[in-house]
Image (cartoon, rainbow, N blue to C red):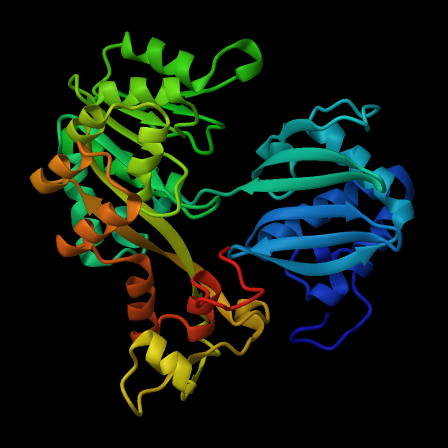
Length: 430
Protein backbone atom coordinates (compact mmCIF):
# COMPACT_ATOMS: atom_id res chain seq x y z
CA UNK A 1 0.00 0.00 0.00
CA UNK A 2 1.98 2.96 -1.26
CA UNK A 3 1.05 5.98 0.80
CA UNK A 4 3.27 8.79 -0.34
CA UNK A 5 5.91 7.48 -2.74
CA UNK A 6 6.02 5.75 -6.07
CA UNK A 7 6.51 2.04 -5.95
CA UNK A 8 10.06 1.15 -6.94
CA UNK A 9 12.29 -1.84 -6.51
CA UNK A 10 13.62 -1.57 -2.94
CA UNK A 11 17.25 -1.54 -1.99
CA UNK A 12 17.65 -4.32 0.56
CA UNK A 13 20.36 -2.32 2.33
CA UNK A 14 18.21 0.82 2.50
CA UNK A 15 15.80 -1.09 4.70
CA UNK A 16 18.42 -0.89 7.46
CA UNK A 17 19.08 2.85 7.16
CA UNK A 18 15.84 4.75 6.60
CA UNK A 19 12.05 4.37 6.73
CA UNK A 20 10.60 2.78 3.60
CA UNK A 21 7.04 3.21 2.35
CA UNK A 22 4.88 0.27 3.39
CA UNK A 23 4.68 -1.09 -0.15
CA UNK A 24 8.46 -1.58 -0.24
CA UNK A 25 9.01 -3.11 3.19
CA UNK A 26 7.50 -6.49 2.34
CA UNK A 27 9.47 -6.86 -0.90
CA UNK A 28 12.73 -5.96 0.83
CA UNK A 29 12.12 -8.35 3.73
CA UNK A 30 11.18 -11.19 1.38
CA UNK A 31 14.37 -10.63 -0.62
CA UNK A 32 16.45 -10.79 2.56
CA UNK A 33 14.64 -13.81 4.02
CA UNK A 34 15.07 -15.72 0.77
CA UNK A 35 18.86 -15.75 1.17
CA UNK A 36 18.96 -18.68 3.61
CA UNK A 37 19.81 -18.61 7.32
CA UNK A 38 22.00 -15.52 7.08
CA UNK A 39 19.20 -13.81 5.19
CA UNK A 40 16.76 -14.54 7.99
CA UNK A 41 19.11 -12.80 10.44
CA UNK A 42 19.21 -9.71 8.24
CA UNK A 43 15.45 -9.85 7.66
CA UNK A 44 14.66 -9.80 11.38
CA UNK A 45 17.12 -6.97 11.97
CA UNK A 46 15.58 -5.03 9.10
CA UNK A 47 12.06 -5.73 10.34
CA UNK A 48 12.84 -4.29 13.78
CA UNK A 49 14.70 -1.32 12.31
CA UNK A 50 11.73 -0.46 10.08
CA UNK A 51 9.30 -0.87 12.97
CA UNK A 52 11.35 1.52 15.12
CA UNK A 53 11.72 4.04 12.30
CA UNK A 54 7.96 4.00 11.76
CA UNK A 55 7.38 4.63 15.48
CA UNK A 56 5.63 1.27 15.89
CA UNK A 57 4.95 0.04 19.40
CA UNK A 58 4.10 -3.51 18.28
CA UNK A 59 4.83 -5.77 15.33
CA UNK A 60 2.38 -8.54 14.40
CA UNK A 61 3.48 -11.49 12.26
CA UNK A 62 0.55 -13.82 11.62
CA UNK A 63 0.54 -16.71 9.13
CA UNK A 64 -2.49 -17.18 6.90
CA UNK A 65 -3.13 -19.53 3.99
CA UNK A 66 -2.25 -16.85 1.44
CA UNK A 67 0.76 -15.34 3.24
CA UNK A 68 2.19 -13.98 6.46
CA UNK A 69 0.50 -10.77 7.52
CA UNK A 70 2.90 -8.07 8.75
CA UNK A 71 1.28 -5.25 10.72
CA UNK A 72 2.65 -2.31 12.69
CA UNK A 73 0.81 -0.66 15.56
CA UNK A 74 1.51 3.06 15.20
CA UNK A 75 0.03 5.59 17.62
CA UNK A 76 -2.35 2.93 18.90
CA UNK A 77 -3.73 1.65 15.59
CA UNK A 78 -2.71 -1.40 13.58
CA UNK A 79 -1.64 -0.77 9.98
CA UNK A 80 -1.29 -3.50 7.35
CA UNK A 81 2.27 -3.26 6.08
CA UNK A 82 2.82 -6.29 3.85
CA UNK A 83 2.05 -9.92 3.14
CA UNK A 84 5.19 -12.06 3.15
CA UNK A 85 5.47 -15.45 1.42
CA UNK A 86 4.56 -18.29 3.79
CA UNK A 87 7.82 -20.11 3.00
CA UNK A 88 9.78 -17.44 4.89
CA UNK A 89 7.76 -17.66 8.11
CA UNK A 90 9.64 -20.57 9.69
CA UNK A 91 13.05 -18.92 9.24
CA UNK A 92 11.90 -15.53 10.53
CA UNK A 93 10.07 -17.06 13.52
CA UNK A 94 13.05 -19.24 14.32
CA UNK A 95 15.42 -16.29 14.30
CA UNK A 96 13.14 -14.25 16.56
CA UNK A 97 12.88 -17.15 19.03
CA UNK A 98 16.66 -17.56 19.12
CA UNK A 99 17.12 -13.87 19.90
CA UNK A 100 14.40 -14.03 22.59
CA UNK A 101 15.96 -17.15 24.14
CA UNK A 102 12.87 -19.29 23.51
CA UNK A 103 12.62 -22.98 22.72
CA UNK A 104 12.81 -23.05 18.94
CA UNK A 105 11.29 -26.54 18.70
CA UNK A 106 8.28 -25.64 20.89
CA UNK A 107 5.58 -24.60 18.45
CA UNK A 108 2.34 -25.91 19.96
CA UNK A 109 2.43 -23.91 23.22
CA UNK A 110 2.62 -20.13 23.83
CA UNK A 111 5.98 -18.71 24.86
CA UNK A 112 7.21 -15.37 26.16
CA UNK A 113 10.71 -13.96 25.77
CA UNK A 114 12.76 -10.80 25.54
CA UNK A 115 15.35 -9.54 23.09
CA UNK A 116 18.02 -7.34 24.67
CA UNK A 117 18.72 -3.92 23.08
CA UNK A 118 22.19 -4.91 21.90
CA UNK A 119 20.78 -7.94 20.06
CA UNK A 120 17.66 -6.44 18.50
CA UNK A 121 19.21 -4.61 15.58
CA UNK A 122 17.21 -1.47 16.36
CA UNK A 123 18.95 -0.82 19.67
CA UNK A 124 15.77 -1.23 21.70
CA UNK A 125 14.55 -4.01 23.98
CA UNK A 126 11.78 -6.14 22.49
CA UNK A 127 9.25 -8.27 24.33
CA UNK A 128 8.22 -11.33 22.28
CA UNK A 129 5.08 -13.44 22.55
CA UNK A 130 4.26 -16.50 20.43
CA UNK A 131 0.85 -18.10 20.08
CA UNK A 132 0.00 -21.32 18.19
CA UNK A 133 -2.66 -21.11 15.49
CA UNK A 134 -3.95 -23.58 12.90
CA UNK A 135 -1.74 -21.85 10.31
CA UNK A 136 1.40 -21.77 12.44
CA UNK A 137 2.90 -19.60 15.15
CA UNK A 138 1.70 -16.04 15.48
CA UNK A 139 4.34 -13.63 16.81
CA UNK A 140 3.76 -10.28 18.49
CA UNK A 141 6.81 -8.16 19.24
CA UNK A 142 6.43 -5.22 21.64
CA UNK A 143 9.18 -2.64 21.10
CA UNK A 144 10.02 -1.20 24.50
CA UNK A 145 10.81 2.34 23.54
CA UNK A 146 10.24 4.51 26.60
CA UNK A 147 11.33 8.06 25.97
CA UNK A 148 12.77 9.43 29.24
CA UNK A 149 11.86 12.91 28.00
CA UNK A 150 8.21 11.88 28.39
CA UNK A 151 8.63 11.22 32.10
CA UNK A 152 7.67 14.79 32.85
CA UNK A 153 4.13 15.78 33.78
CA UNK A 154 4.40 18.93 31.68
CA UNK A 155 5.03 17.13 28.38
CA UNK A 156 2.41 14.36 28.53
CA UNK A 157 -0.27 16.55 26.98
CA UNK A 158 -2.65 16.81 29.93
CA UNK A 159 -4.46 20.10 30.40
CA UNK A 160 -3.25 22.44 33.15
CA UNK A 161 -5.91 21.39 35.67
CA UNK A 162 -5.07 17.68 35.30
CA UNK A 163 -1.34 18.37 35.63
CA UNK A 164 -1.95 20.44 38.75
CA UNK A 165 -4.07 17.64 40.25
CA UNK A 166 -1.29 15.09 39.65
CA UNK A 167 1.25 17.40 41.23
CA UNK A 168 -1.03 17.71 44.23
CA UNK A 169 -1.19 13.92 44.54
CA UNK A 170 2.59 13.44 44.66
CA UNK A 171 2.92 15.87 47.57
CA UNK A 172 0.63 13.77 49.78
CA UNK A 173 2.32 11.72 52.48
CA UNK A 174 -0.17 8.87 52.23
CA UNK A 175 -3.22 7.59 50.40
CA UNK A 176 -3.95 5.59 47.25
CA UNK A 177 -4.13 7.08 43.77
CA UNK A 178 -5.42 4.77 41.05
CA UNK A 179 -5.23 5.09 37.26
CA UNK A 180 -7.54 3.29 34.89
CA UNK A 181 -7.82 2.97 31.14
CA UNK A 182 -7.46 0.43 28.33
CA UNK A 183 -4.16 -1.20 27.44
CA UNK A 184 -1.62 1.15 25.84
CA UNK A 185 -3.34 4.29 27.10
CA UNK A 186 -0.17 5.69 28.66
CA UNK A 187 -0.77 4.76 32.30
CA UNK A 188 2.77 3.47 32.89
CA UNK A 189 4.29 6.61 31.37
CA UNK A 190 2.13 8.76 33.65
CA UNK A 191 3.23 6.75 36.68
CA UNK A 192 6.91 7.10 35.73
CA UNK A 193 6.39 10.86 35.36
CA UNK A 194 4.80 10.95 38.82
CA UNK A 195 7.76 9.05 40.27
CA UNK A 196 10.16 11.55 38.70
CA UNK A 197 8.07 14.37 40.17
CA UNK A 198 8.20 12.74 43.62
CA UNK A 199 11.97 12.37 43.50
CA UNK A 200 12.34 15.92 42.28
CA UNK A 201 10.17 17.38 45.03
CA UNK A 202 11.11 15.16 47.97
CA UNK A 203 14.69 14.48 47.02
CA UNK A 204 16.51 11.33 45.85
CA UNK A 205 16.59 9.93 49.37
CA UNK A 206 12.86 9.18 49.16
CA UNK A 207 12.34 5.41 49.35
CA UNK A 208 10.26 4.41 46.32
CA UNK A 209 9.48 0.72 45.69
CA UNK A 210 7.97 -0.20 42.31
CA UNK A 211 6.54 -3.65 41.51
CA UNK A 212 5.97 -4.09 37.79
CA UNK A 213 5.14 -6.67 35.11
CA UNK A 214 7.47 -6.15 33.34
CA UNK A 215 9.88 -3.34 34.21
CA UNK A 216 9.72 -1.22 31.05
CA UNK A 217 12.30 1.39 31.97
CA UNK A 218 14.89 1.48 34.72
CA UNK A 219 14.56 4.56 36.87
CA UNK A 220 17.43 5.82 38.94
CA UNK A 221 17.04 5.82 42.73
CA UNK A 222 13.95 3.56 42.60
CA UNK A 223 13.80 -0.04 43.87
CA UNK A 224 12.16 -1.79 40.91
CA UNK A 225 11.10 -5.44 40.97
CA UNK A 226 9.50 -7.64 38.34
CA UNK A 227 6.77 -10.09 39.29
CA UNK A 228 7.26 -13.76 38.46
CA UNK A 229 4.02 -15.65 38.98
CA UNK A 230 5.65 -18.96 37.98
CA UNK A 231 7.96 -18.66 40.99
CA UNK A 232 5.19 -17.45 43.31
CA UNK A 233 6.37 -13.84 43.23
CA UNK A 234 2.94 -12.41 42.48
CA UNK A 235 1.78 -8.82 42.94
CA UNK A 236 0.22 -9.73 46.27
CA UNK A 237 3.32 -11.57 47.55
CA UNK A 238 5.64 -8.80 46.31
CA UNK A 239 3.48 -6.12 47.91
CA UNK A 240 3.45 -7.83 51.30
CA UNK A 241 7.23 -8.23 51.19
CA UNK A 242 7.74 -4.63 50.05
CA UNK A 243 5.73 -3.33 53.00
CA UNK A 244 8.41 -4.81 55.27
CA UNK A 245 11.08 -2.78 53.45
CA UNK A 246 10.09 0.54 55.07
CA UNK A 247 8.85 2.21 51.83
CA UNK A 248 7.50 5.74 51.62
CA UNK A 249 6.02 5.38 48.13
CA UNK A 250 4.68 2.12 46.71
CA UNK A 251 4.04 1.73 42.99
CA UNK A 252 2.09 -1.28 41.72
CA UNK A 253 1.87 -2.02 38.03
CA UNK A 254 -1.68 -3.30 38.44
CA UNK A 255 -4.24 -4.34 41.03
CA UNK A 256 -5.49 -7.65 39.64
CA UNK A 257 -7.02 -9.61 42.52
CA UNK A 258 -8.92 -9.03 45.76
CA UNK A 259 -5.92 -9.78 47.99
CA UNK A 260 -3.73 -7.19 46.27
CA UNK A 261 -6.57 -4.68 46.29
CA UNK A 262 -7.17 -4.99 50.03
CA UNK A 263 -3.45 -4.87 50.88
CA UNK A 264 -2.80 -1.85 48.62
CA UNK A 265 -5.76 0.13 49.93
CA UNK A 266 -4.83 -0.70 53.51
CA UNK A 267 -1.27 0.48 52.82
CA UNK A 268 -2.66 3.83 51.75
CA UNK A 269 -4.01 4.26 55.27
CA UNK A 270 -0.82 3.35 57.10
CA UNK A 271 1.59 6.08 56.05
CA UNK A 272 2.35 5.11 52.43
CA UNK A 273 1.57 6.85 49.16
CA UNK A 274 0.33 4.07 46.86
CA UNK A 275 0.10 4.54 43.08
CA UNK A 276 -1.35 1.78 40.92
CA UNK A 277 -3.61 0.92 38.00
CA UNK A 278 -6.88 -0.98 37.93
CA UNK A 279 -9.22 -1.95 35.11
CA UNK A 280 -12.40 0.08 34.86
CA UNK A 281 -14.15 1.98 32.10
CA UNK A 282 -14.40 5.30 33.94
CA UNK A 283 -12.94 7.06 36.94
CA UNK A 284 -16.16 6.55 38.89
CA UNK A 285 -16.19 2.87 37.99
CA UNK A 286 -12.96 2.32 39.94
CA UNK A 287 -14.88 2.44 43.21
CA UNK A 288 -17.42 -0.13 42.00
CA UNK A 289 -14.53 -2.37 41.00
CA UNK A 290 -12.87 -2.03 44.41
CA UNK A 291 -16.10 -2.86 46.22
CA UNK A 292 -16.64 -5.86 43.93
CA UNK A 293 -13.12 -7.04 44.86
CA UNK A 294 -14.04 -7.08 48.53
CA UNK A 295 -12.59 -3.76 49.67
CA UNK A 296 -14.77 -2.42 52.47
CA UNK A 297 -16.51 0.90 51.69
CA UNK A 298 -14.92 2.63 54.67
CA UNK A 299 -11.44 1.60 53.46
CA UNK A 300 -12.06 2.84 49.92
CA UNK A 301 -13.48 6.12 51.23
CA UNK A 302 -10.65 6.72 53.69
CA UNK A 303 -7.67 5.53 51.66
CA UNK A 304 -8.32 6.50 48.03
CA UNK A 305 -7.46 10.17 47.52
CA UNK A 306 -8.20 10.23 43.82
CA UNK A 307 -8.55 8.26 40.59
CA UNK A 308 -7.89 9.13 36.97
CA UNK A 309 -9.23 7.57 33.79
CA UNK A 310 -6.76 8.06 30.96
CA UNK A 311 -6.84 7.91 27.16
CA UNK A 312 -4.44 8.85 24.40
CA UNK A 313 -5.56 10.74 21.32
CA UNK A 314 -3.62 11.09 18.08
CA UNK A 315 -2.42 14.55 17.21
CA UNK A 316 -3.10 15.74 13.68
CA UNK A 317 0.11 15.99 11.68
CA UNK A 318 1.14 19.68 11.71
CA UNK A 319 2.79 19.36 8.28
CA UNK A 320 -0.23 18.24 6.29
CA UNK A 321 -3.45 18.77 8.28
CA UNK A 322 -5.98 20.88 6.40
CA UNK A 323 -8.81 23.07 7.61
CA UNK A 324 -12.29 21.85 6.77
CA UNK A 325 -15.83 22.75 7.76
CA UNK A 326 -17.23 20.02 10.01
CA UNK A 327 -20.46 18.21 9.25
CA UNK A 328 -23.49 19.43 11.23
CA UNK A 329 -23.39 16.30 13.38
CA UNK A 330 -19.69 16.85 14.19
CA UNK A 331 -20.31 20.53 14.92
CA UNK A 332 -23.07 19.69 17.38
CA UNK A 333 -21.15 16.87 19.06
CA UNK A 334 -17.93 18.81 19.53
CA UNK A 335 -19.56 22.12 20.41
CA UNK A 336 -17.96 23.93 17.46
CA UNK A 337 -19.11 27.47 16.78
CA UNK A 338 -20.89 28.23 13.52
CA UNK A 339 -18.43 29.02 10.76
CA UNK A 340 -15.44 27.64 12.67
CA UNK A 341 -13.30 25.07 10.94
CA UNK A 342 -11.67 21.91 12.21
CA UNK A 343 -8.66 19.91 11.13
CA UNK A 344 -8.77 17.12 8.57
CA UNK A 345 -6.07 14.42 8.39
CA UNK A 346 -4.38 14.17 4.98
CA UNK A 347 -1.08 12.27 5.05
CA UNK A 348 2.46 13.17 4.03
CA UNK A 349 6.02 11.77 4.33
CA UNK A 350 6.47 13.37 7.77
CA UNK A 351 3.58 11.34 9.23
CA UNK A 352 4.27 8.26 7.06
CA UNK A 353 1.09 8.91 5.11
CA UNK A 354 -1.18 8.39 8.13
CA UNK A 355 -2.31 11.94 8.76
CA UNK A 356 -1.50 11.86 12.47
CA UNK A 357 1.83 12.13 14.26
CA UNK A 358 2.30 11.45 17.94
CA UNK A 359 -0.19 11.19 20.76
CA UNK A 360 -1.15 13.19 23.84
CA UNK A 361 -2.96 12.27 27.03
CA UNK A 362 -6.44 13.01 28.32
CA UNK A 363 -7.13 12.58 32.04
CA UNK A 364 -10.50 12.40 33.80
CA UNK A 365 -9.53 13.17 37.40
CA UNK A 366 -11.88 12.40 40.27
CA UNK A 367 -10.66 13.73 43.61
CA UNK A 368 -12.21 12.32 46.76
CA UNK A 369 -13.63 15.03 49.03
CA UNK A 370 -15.71 14.77 52.20
CA UNK A 371 -19.00 14.61 50.29
CA UNK A 372 -17.77 11.74 48.14
CA UNK A 373 -16.35 9.93 51.17
CA UNK A 374 -19.79 9.93 52.74
CA UNK A 375 -21.39 8.78 49.49
CA UNK A 376 -19.00 5.85 49.14
CA UNK A 377 -20.06 4.49 52.52
CA UNK A 378 -23.51 3.79 51.01
CA UNK A 379 -22.14 1.52 48.22
CA UNK A 380 -23.47 3.80 45.47
CA UNK A 381 -23.95 2.88 41.83
CA UNK A 382 -21.25 4.00 39.40
CA UNK A 383 -23.54 6.58 37.79
CA UNK A 384 -24.26 8.12 41.19
CA UNK A 385 -20.53 8.53 41.86
CA UNK A 386 -20.03 9.92 38.35
CA UNK A 387 -22.80 12.50 38.78
CA UNK A 388 -21.39 13.57 42.15
CA UNK A 389 -17.92 13.98 40.62
CA UNK A 390 -19.32 16.10 37.77
CA UNK A 391 -21.08 18.31 40.31
CA UNK A 392 -17.73 18.73 42.09
CA UNK A 393 -16.05 19.91 38.88
CA UNK A 394 -14.69 16.78 37.20
CA UNK A 395 -14.29 17.21 33.43
CA UNK A 396 -15.17 13.95 31.62
CA UNK A 397 -12.90 12.46 28.98
CA UNK A 398 -15.26 13.20 26.10
CA UNK A 399 -15.43 16.91 26.91
CA UNK A 400 -11.64 17.05 27.13
CA UNK A 401 -11.36 15.41 23.72
CA UNK A 402 -13.91 17.84 22.28
CA UNK A 403 -11.82 20.72 23.62
CA UNK A 404 -8.82 19.32 21.72
CA UNK A 405 -10.88 19.26 18.52
CA UNK A 406 -11.95 22.87 19.08
CA UNK A 407 -8.32 23.81 19.79
CA UNK A 408 -7.35 22.21 16.45
CA UNK A 409 -5.03 19.67 18.03
CA UNK A 410 -6.85 16.70 16.52
CA UNK A 411 -9.77 15.90 14.23
CA UNK A 412 -13.47 15.10 14.72
CA UNK A 413 -12.73 11.66 13.26
CA UNK A 414 -10.26 10.94 16.05
CA UNK A 415 -12.83 11.94 18.66
CA UNK A 416 -15.35 9.61 17.02
CA UNK A 417 -12.82 6.77 17.08
CA UNK A 418 -12.17 7.22 20.79
CA UNK A 419 -15.75 7.95 21.80
CA UNK A 420 -18.22 6.50 19.29
CA UNK A 421 -21.62 8.14 19.32
CA UNK A 422 -24.51 5.97 20.57
CA UNK A 423 -25.71 3.74 17.76
CA UNK A 424 -22.47 4.14 15.82
CA UNK A 425 -22.68 0.48 14.82
CA UNK A 426 -19.29 -1.01 14.06
CA UNK A 427 -17.24 1.58 15.90
CA UNK A 428 -15.61 0.58 19.13
CA UNK A 429 -13.37 2.24 21.64
CA UNK A 430 -9.71 1.47 21.03
